[in-house]
Image 1: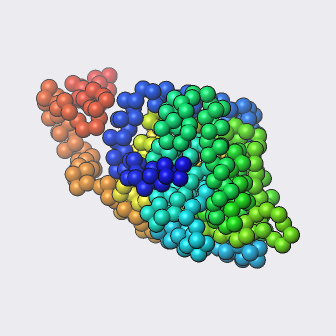
Image 2: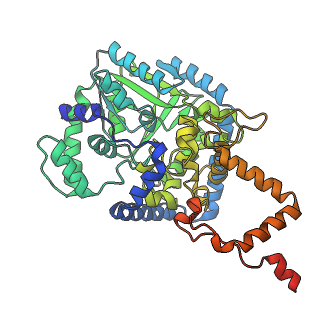
Image 3: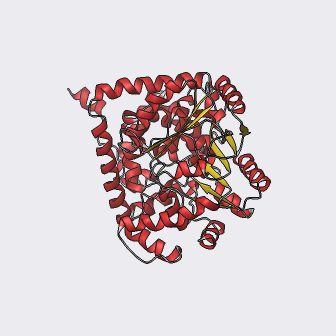
Length: 483
C-alpha cells in the first residue's frame, strides 16, 4: 500500500487550473454521467437538509444566532487569536503562525524531521488541501495518507476533492471498484459498497498503529478554554488525534470563537446544513496532549494557524463576511451551476459559491477572475447559508473588483483589475459619453436602425447561446409618439 500511495502522490497532479475554468465547464457539461450523478446527489442532500429545517421560522432564528456569533467573533479576531494562543500554550500545545502555504508546509516538515517521521496519517482537512500538504511533503520524502474514506479515494485517483464535505461525490461505485482493484494490493473487484468500505478500513487500520504523526483539521477553536473542536462521522479523526505520538492540527485563523457556548449553535447549524444530521457520529473536543496518568492521546500537540489571504478579506469591510463560513457545503448543494459542472471544474480547493468568493482572496483575482461569474445570482446559496453570508452581493463586488481599481479607502485585492481590457474600457466610456448627449444618441440610434439588416451574426459571448441582438425597426419612443 505504501508504494502505491507514494507513487500517486509524487506523480504530476491531475488538478485543473482555475484559469481554464470556462474550458473545464464545457468538458463537464458534455459529461452526461457526471451531470446525472451530481444532480442525483444534490437532490438527495437538499432533501436531507430540508427534513431538518422543516420550520423556516426556526431556521431563521437559529441562523440569526449563528450569524451574530460569527460576526462577533470576527469583530474581535485579533484579540481572540492572541487569547487562543495563550490558552493553548498553557495546555501544552505549541502554536505556530503561517502567513502562506509555503510557511505552513515548512512547519510540517520541521516537525516531521524533528520526530524522524516518514509518514503522516491525515483526517479530513480542507486547509491541508489548500496548502497541498500531501504533495509538498512527498517531495521531501514524507508520505501523507488520507484516512477519511472520500479523501482516501480521491488520493488514490490523484484528484482534488470535488466537494468540501463529500470529497469523492463525483465518483460512481463502479469507478471506485475499479480504482480499488487496480491500486489497493490484494483487493478484488466488487461493487458492493459495504465491501468497498471494508477494503479501505482494513488498509487504513494498519496505518494508524505505525504512523508517528497524525494530522487533523479544526471546525471551531475556543479562545477562552484553549479547546479545538473537530466534527466527523467515521472515527478516523479521533484515531488521527489520539493514536500517533504527535498530533498536528491546521486551520484558518477565522475559525476561532470566544466561548464554548458559542460552539453549540454553530454545531447544530453545521451538521444539519452539511449532511442533514441532527448530530454527527463524533464530536471531538481536544484540549491538549496526553497528561500524566492518561492512557491515550498524543505525547505532543501542535496547532498551525494559517492566514493565506484571510487577513486581506478581514481588512475590507465589504469582504469580511466571507470569513463567516463554517464550511457546511449547503451553498454548493443548492447551486444550479455547481450541480451541473461539479467541483473539479473550478480548479480550486473550495468549489461552488463559497469557493467563488473565497478563492480570489487565497489565490488572487488574476487566476480566479472567472469564478465570480459562475453564478446565476438566483440567491439559493444565500437563502440556505446557515450563517447569513450574502454570497450574491459578494460575487457582484468581486466581478467589479476584477475589472476596476479599488475605491478610495479600500485595500486592493491581489490581482484586482486584471480582467479589465482597454477595448471594454473604451466601449463603456464611449457609451457613457453618447448617452449623456441625447441628440447624438438619437442620431446614432437612427443610423443603426437603418443598418439593422447588416447586424453582425457574431456578438461575442452573447451569441454563443442566444440569437444575435438586432434593433427593432421602430423604437419605443416612436411608438409612444404615435399614441
